[in-house]
Amino acid sequence: MATDQSITVDVVQYRSLLDSLGSLPKAANRDMRREAEYIAESLMVPAISSAIRSHAPGYATKLIATIRTKQDRLPGVRVGNSTRTSSRGTVMNPRSGLGSGTYSGGATPNMIRFGTIKGQYMARSGRTQFWAEGITPGWTKTADTAYAEPAFSAWIKVADKLVDDWNRGSDF
Image (cartoon, rainbow, N blue to C red; front, side, top):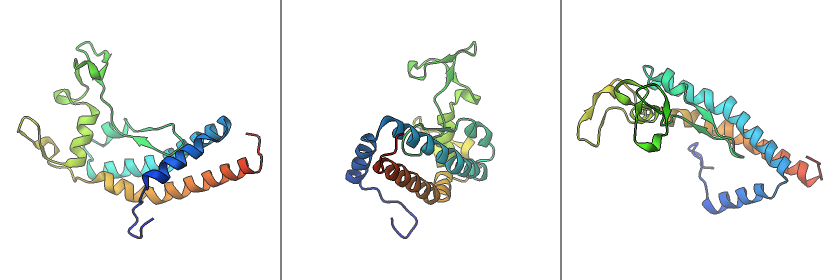
């Protein structure tokens, strides 16, 4: 890790880590997924929610409602979705290209997320998107600064414990 509080990931070492985790028994992997989800829920979600509230208060409730933790061996969080609805209010497949988003003007949560990260921006059509004018861009950096180190440290402790238990012959 660098001293500027950023985490540097070596792709080869990361792939090796994932392969090593894959060699653990199924029960150990299940425990790792459960612990990673707990870390994401307890450390990452509050930091992301707080960052969204401080940078984009007008859209915070819409974005915070779409925060989901990933069920993987490494803690992860998704913000936004591509939910589209038909004129009758039925949720549709976002890849169908039909329907409209659930918010004003047919916006989906992913569209709102982009605007809250970028701030006022130029759309593909060439028109300036003024709806994002009152937003302070950069909530992703604020959230990352708040959760990266604590989440990484907590995950390392959990991984060390699980690997130690496995090396001692623990029956998961």
